[in-house]
Image (cartoon, rainbow over all chains, first blue to last red; front, side):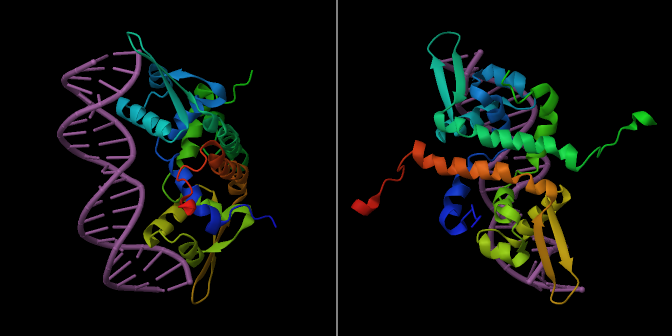
Length: 120
Length: 120
DNA sequence: CTGTATCCGAGAGGATACTG
DNA sequence: CAGTATCCTCTCGGATACAG
């Protein structure tokens, strides 16, 4: 019995959890929190050039509400806020890592899709 | 050096690959193809009650175009079409598995969030 | 520095009808 | 059976301005 995914028993819960990772920036944000990394709001802005403040704040809030990311505010001026993975969030690292490895394997299965035109 | 994710070198490629998994149904579909499972169009309709035909076909096409899912058409009537993971798609299984394990760990970190009403 | 508020366009996704 | 076509709605996400 190699079945790992049982639709009737797990699907409902799995879909819920999966939704927490949806959105254009969630995974990207999480990757930058990988491995215990701690980032500030402004760090993300630098690390993820394409993201808007609205999206960054919004995604961060959702991640926080879902218990994946922890937000720590330092009561000082100017404000300082740190983001890091919660315990459960860190449990996501193996999956993040597997995803990364999969991404890297793309070249192995689809070599030089945008071939080297250097030879021309 | 424990860094696994290198923004400057991998981000561009990783984001691309990550996009292939975005969308409300992609992962769900993939989970049903887990472990070498082969499914027909109508199987998915039964397995994923909430999905519309449009979305099912569309997501399947994209997955196919991205080289994650293979589509096999049997030239007969009535038509028969089978879907399965490509080689690269199967390389996703470890990640899918890790995601599943993570989802299951939710209870461990957030026990009985919707408390047992059976006691009432 | 770390956000929030508002407006706006694009596209995701749903419902329904139709076809080879 | 396995889709496609069309329409419609709603949310996602970007841009800009403002605030504690």
